[in-house]
Length: 197
Length: 125
Image (tube, rainbow over all chains, first blue to last red):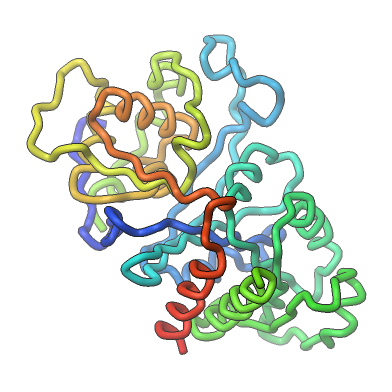
């Protein structure tokens, strides 16, 4: 790393000196459209980072020692949206594997809530994700990502299959579309606001 | 964007993480979360030569404004744990300023959520 890093000024958080940073999780199984969703809303090109699995077990000290054998990594995608002069919102996307414990703790801590992206043709793949979200006590809404040619399954059947609470919002969205994705996010935040009463 | 996007992520591949971190452990999570905002303490100070190339690179990245810890990891392509350790060391050395997010327990949740809702409606409504 000998060359000086230079980023476009738009890459920086404009109101960073005064803004409060908040985050919402965008979760779902592999290839459900998380990165596409984040890319549709984010004001920066979505970034990706890796969390090593070193701390997933009780091996906190491994990172200090030369005997560390941890090489497994998992990618997490994220984007950013300036909400106002006072708030900047981060959207974090991650797969729902139980074994990525440390990453889930990092992501869930302090999150406003979660949007669960669901593929109506692969509902069973979403069970593990929803289990995790509930385990971490996060409020969530379901966004059914409708791909081309996929029949729009009835929300009632989907509610039953996913065993949702009556007030958990279910919306249909197209993760490739900015407005459609934003509407799903707005549905989630409105629900979180109701819950905060 | 230029810079990091065009470079080969050689440091991440050719040097094992504990070498880059000089064997230091992970910092307190409350101090450096994924969305802690970070910037250089001063943009005209002399860079001490005892900083490692990775530390100097992170410091330069943070000179032009605020970035979240997650964004710094994304731009440098270093593992998150390594980035947190280096940022923590730079903060302790007085080179960086960090702004941890407000803790949820003390967060005026309703106010923040209302602001987020209004902001989203204004941008996409």
